[in-house]
Length: 298
Image (cartoon, rainbow, N blue to C red; front, side):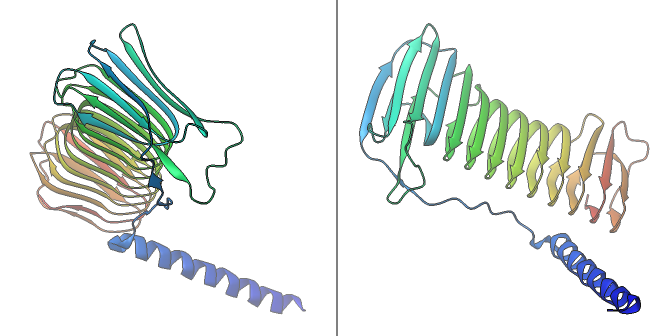
């Protein structure tokens, strides 16, 4: 093959790769991109292994699990109840009160292959008084986490593979590797996601960072710091009282109604459209995008 022919083939290959890349960008910028992490749909165990009730106040509740669906629910009384379901031949479970700290644990026994046929998920249910105002810490390797409304509780959640859904908390920290995050209401939130969507309802202060997936927030009433590597960022209602910044590498930035804010907006590839830009405002929101539109519809 002569040098000239090699050159033409090289140009053709590069052109095809460029067209594919542009197509992916158009698809994502067009708002059709949405990360949907895959997770097998496994049955939950109905075999009750532990049922403990604690009438002593706990200033910290720790839940550590290898592969469990975890439910933290409002109790009907002032007691804390722990119920663990699973297979005692395949895991080690415990619930112990040490001083004012409640430790709940589920660990797989060595040699058990979790991804076998007819695998049944363990389940942990914890019932806590709705007025609980101390610390809740959860570390889960595999399985979903669902938490009811605890407006005064401080939550620290670490998830490796599964969805995290919280109705309400005081200060909420979530670090998720693979799965979606849903937070309906919180005073302060710090959300980190590697692969999956972040959805928040009403928050006073929020920091959110996503590597692969969308960020959608209904209402922010004080401060924000948002960044995304691949996916859209959307804030429907924004009341900003501090200087803030939104960064996106690839995807749209959209903001709905706002108070008086000065928007410093720049995008490398895309359009910028701002409804009302208050240059003499007391607060500034810096918007930076590498590939995607910036739209402020206020």
